[in-house]
Image (cartoon, rainbow, N blue to C red):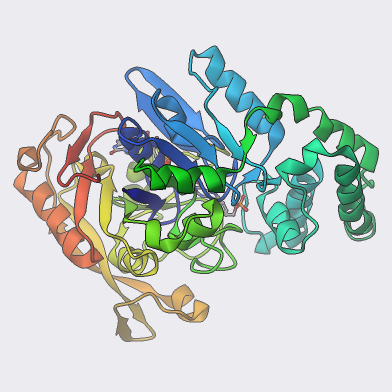
Length: 427
Ligand code: GDP
Ligand code: IMO
Ligand code: MG
């Protein structure tokens, strides 16, 4: 039975929250497999708007079990405040399940994130400052603290001691900061134990059993393909694997179980933080996309950098994720342009390049080669069928599909659940 991965095909903020929520009513489990509260997923249900950071967007669908997989990094304070915020708004959060193997973001990780960025100065990544990178670094360095450590005070204390031994040296000697006391961290973490205990289980076993029983499982990515630590625009990336393979390691299911991989693709491009972005606009068109598209970060409130659609990026996302479908979002935002430029290739040092260059030096020099597509002026937000779209909007979608290498199976024409044109079913 279906296991679907839904992930960002660009630099994040493609509309994953909306797409996940749309499927939430038809799936049994929604699983976050990487990232943490660096994500900001907006879901609009009727007149209610929700901003989710750590919780899977499936939490808003009553029949669906939300799962935080082992690959996620969990800030327990953020988790509990997100849960209580939703409970206050009448959302049932009791079904949530959390992997005992997920790593914890502690106050020293957030401190390290901020001081490292300050130290980098002009070369900073522009992280969300949520402690994501330092927590994954500790995981790989084998000095991380896991959710299950909360239930054994002695192990927790030993692990915090081991982690802080090193970190306090760095904080004091390199960054001129005060050392962090082991007892203080342990006490804070133990304070979350009772509130979290009921949610924690072996999510890998549970998800594999669910798939054996024919249940439908949706894996919801945070961030996006070009922010992937292996396949993105390194070092201007996040510290996890949002790409499709990350769903396997981050949830403990084998690749043979995944049937469908859906790439969420904005009809133009945005990026938050530093790093290369060939189609970025610094003119009125960029401002217009930002204003009409409401392109302001859900997590940090930063303005998003905006630019035209980049088909080279979309093709790359198809390749590294094995995409079976695209969900094209925010087509409505492009209404009102007479002509819409679409980047079909790059020019690098006088050469035309059709695929994403593997060399960062080349990518930094890449200039977009644009093809002009005719725009439309009709309001498309009420369109329910593909044929309801103006001819030029249909042609825009078809052109993007042809350039991007996978079928566009759904189109977003507004932020709401029902503002979607479904072309092929995802299930
Ligand atoms: P995510 O991080 O991928 O979940 O995306 P964000 O929530 O950070 O940003 C996407 C924004 O676009 C949110 O404000 C959504 O409500 C909104 N959105 C999603 N799909 C559409 C769409 O098709 N049209 C419009 N106008 N807005 C959309
Ligand atoms: P969603 O899930 C857009 C960016 C940050 C920064 C880089 C590293 O809403 O699409 P980090 O804090 O992860 O170490 O920052 O990654 N970034 C995002 N950009 N959407 C996101 O999440 C992002 N999560 C991280 O801006 O450039
Ligand atoms: Mg977002």
